Length: 209
Image (cartoon, rainbow, N blue to C red; front, side, top):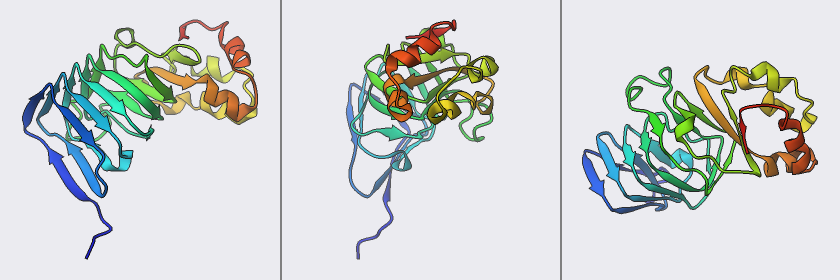
C-alpha cells in the first residue's frame, strides 16, 4: 500500500565537489547534513520548504537554483559562502540566529553571496555583514538595519494594504542586517505604482535599489 507520508532522504557526512544535486522527487523529504559540505556544486530545488531541511550543511561557491518559489524557508542551520541564487524566494531567512534551535545554532551564516539574479520578497538577512552580499536591484529594494530603523519606516505613509510589512520590523531579530522586498509585489497588493513606492523610499538613507 502506498503511504501518504513522504520518505526521508538524508545526504550527510561527506564532501561533494562539482556535483549537480536535484531535489524534486515526489513523496521525498530531503535532509542535507549533518557534516555535509558542497563545493562548487549546483543544487536544484523543486520541492517546498516543508520537504527541504537543513541540518548543518556548508555550501561553498555553489549555484542554488530554485525551480519553484521557496516560501518560509529558514537557512539559519546552514552556512553559505560565495553562493549564487536564482529563482524565487518569499519570506525566507538567512544568516545566523543564536536563538534558533540548539543543535546547529553555531553553524548558520552567510557571506559573499549573490542574489542579483533572484526574485526576493520579504527575505531577511540576520547576524551577517550585509556589505558582503549582492542584492537584486529595482524593482527590488533592500532596507539595511531594519530593526534599528523600525520607527523611521513605520512612520512612512504606506497604503493600508502593505503597511503591515513596514510596521513589524520590531518583531525581527535585533541582529537583522537587511530585508529585501519586491516593489512589484507590493505595488500589486496596494494598487499603486512602483514609482510611488520608490518615491516614499528615496528620502531615506541606507536603502539599496
